[in-house]
Amino acid sequence: MRNKGFSLVELLIIITIIAILAVAIAPALLRYIDKSRKADDIAAADAIGSALKASMSNEIIYDSIMDKVKSVTASDSYVCTPLLVASEDDSEWTIYGNSPSVDLTALKNEMDKTCPPEKLKYRKSVNPADAGYTNADYVVGSWNEFNPDGWLVCIAPTNEPCVYVTDGKKDANLQGVALNPLKCDDYK
Image (cartoon, rainbow, N blue to C red):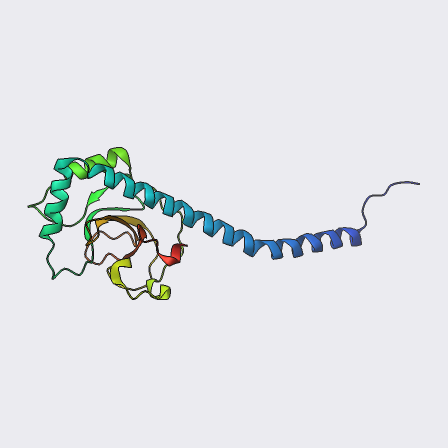
């Protein structure tokens, strides 16, 4: 008896089974990939927060940060004091805003050396309003939906370092949600 291989019907059945399995597995795989990207961003936020805490152990850097915190007035729309920002195309930190009386160059140099900004992995839009927060400490800027593109390093009102994932803007229109230490629900 000669072996003629698979018939066309057998091949179609096999292809159909593979297609059904792919359709069933694809959503779970995409959720796993998203979860992995979110976890990478949270780990990066933890590393950035730790680097900022370590930088604050330097007395000169600490004093300049506290001077910046004192220079932010109640009329500003921030619940935190922004220090450094980085967007997708940045390989180093940028000092946020114009404050000629406060020099954060030492902080910038230390952060560039110890913890340069990482690229964000999670790129899907984030809507802070969906998280149902009543506490504005989780949000910088507005509550609008945005696509994550960068980082913001700031000091919370309790003088604790806080890391936000932002829309990458470097001006007063910047918006974002806290990943560290508060861990936004959208990233869990």
